[in-house]
Image 1 (cartoon, helix red, strand yellow):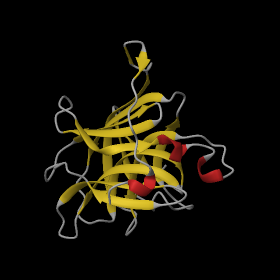
Image 2 (cartoon, rainbow, N blue to C red):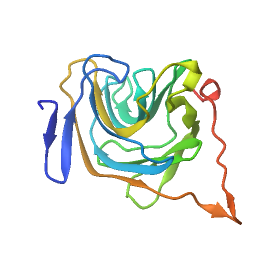
Image 3 (cartoon, one colour):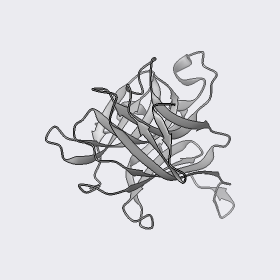
Length: 200
């Protein structure tokens, strides 16, 4: 695969079209087998323009996904951003987390029953939540009354819509499923925000 290179414990993905594209994407993902699961990945990339994006994604299809990624401002400053797309709405937001000018960033997405949340860390030990929980039903087969049947995926992706040449390195990618945490015999509820109420 010319767009993916295995580096032993890590691999590199060369960006292609956006996750909305039905043509060429640089996306490596696995299907969800539990509503309680976590994906972690370390992303090492230096984007220089908004067209460069690399990070972790909760993915259903081209019309329904949430992509937390490193990118750059028009001035070239490295940022952490989120693209959220469902069958009925879409939004983009720069997140309140400073990834610095260079160096690896640890990202995690956590499926917690009816909600989905992302976290970031510079050292892999101290984690910061990113924005608000997402309503995971947006990634379900029956969202918005559509006929869909693939199920959701969790993975990593790289985008370079301008030249299809920019590359990001991913390492320490892990995916684990877990049992829900009970408090006093009751399942803890995390309130998720519907797509139409997400910050932009």
